[in-house]
Image (cartoon, rainbow, N blue to C red; front, side, top):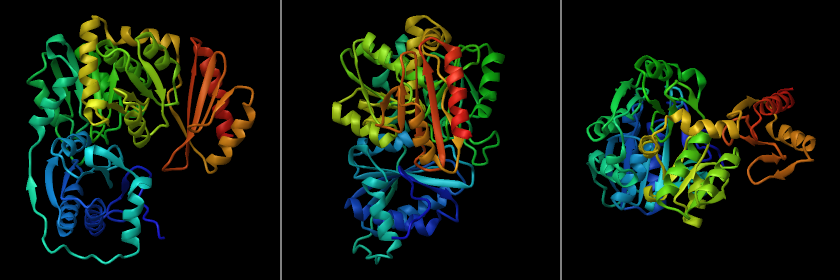
Length: 448
C-alpha cells in the first residue's frame, strides 16, 4: 500500500498543499464518515490560513457520504472533544497543526464519546481507501451542514472542575500566542475574579510573534518579560490549538510540565481521595510521591494521548498527566485540556495561599530533572540499544522506550514516533549536580 506522508501515528499533519490539500481533505471526510457509518460529525478549525478551505472540503466530503456536519468554526481541539460528547455525535475532526510552522496544517480525529482515532485505530483504514482509489459512491441523500457556536456551553462545562468563589484576585499574564486560546479567555475573564494581562490574545494566522509553542525555550521570552514587568502572580501560555498550557512562576521561571502533573494530582486528590492517577514513564518519582502522599494510586501508561486515554478508561482514572503538558480528565471525556489546568492551578494557589514558586519549589529541590532534551540522529534505534548495553547494572523497564533506574538517579530514553529524534529525560533524588553530570554523560553517548 502506498503511504501518504501526512498520516502520522496519532493524527494527520503535513505541508499545505504538497502533503495536505483540499482534494485530500474531501477524501478524508468522505471515507471517515463511511468508516464510522456516521450520521453526524462535528468539525472545527484553528486560525491557520489554509484552515477555512480545508474545512469546507472536509465538510463537503462528509456530506457526500450522507452524513450531517456541525461546524463549530474557529476553536481549540478540546472544544471538538467536548462537542463530540456534548452533542452525542458519531465523530469529531479538528483541523489544526497546533505548534507546527505556518506552512503546515493537519487533523485530529475522535469517534463517539470522544475516543481518539490514530493510525493503528482507523486512520490506516482511511489511508488504504484513499491510496487504493476506492470508488467514491455518493450517498443518495447528501448530508446537511449547520454552524453552531458552542463557546457558552464549553465555558459552562468547565464549571465542574473548579470553584470560582475560591479563586483570589490574582494578577495573571495570559499569552494565547495569537492562536485560538484568546476566545475562551475573553469569556473566562467575565467570570474569574483575576486581573488578566493579555498578550497576543487575538487570533492571527500570520503568527507575527512566532508560532505558539512554549515548550521551546526561545518562545518563552514574551511571557517571562510580561510577568516581570507587571509584577504578576504567574504567567500562562498556550499552544496554537490550546490543548496544552504552560506555567511561569511569579519570578518568570518556566515550570517544567513534570511538576505541574504533581500539582494537579494534589489538587484533584484533595477533593477526590483514593482515585487512580495516570502518569507517563519519562519522569516519575515526584508524581509517585505526591499521589501516594495524597491518598491516590499512581498507574503508569505508555506516553502519547491514545495510550493515556485508553489506560484511563481501563482503570477509571480521574486524571492523567504527561510531562509534555498534556493533562487529561475523566469528566472531560478522558480528553486533554489546556483550560482546566489553568483553572485548577489558579484555585490551588489561592487555597494554599502560596506562590507558584513555593508550591513547586520543594518538588524541584527533591527531584531535580533535566527536562526533555531532543537529539536529531540518523540511527535512533541502534543508539537506544547501544545505551541499553552500557547501563545494564540498573533496574530496566522497556514498557516505553528505555527507562533505567538506580538508587539516586534514573533516566528515560524514547524514540519519537514521527521523526528521527531521540528524547532524553533524567532525574535524581535531591542531587542537582548528579542529575547534570548524568545528563551530560548520556548526551555525549547519544550524540557521539
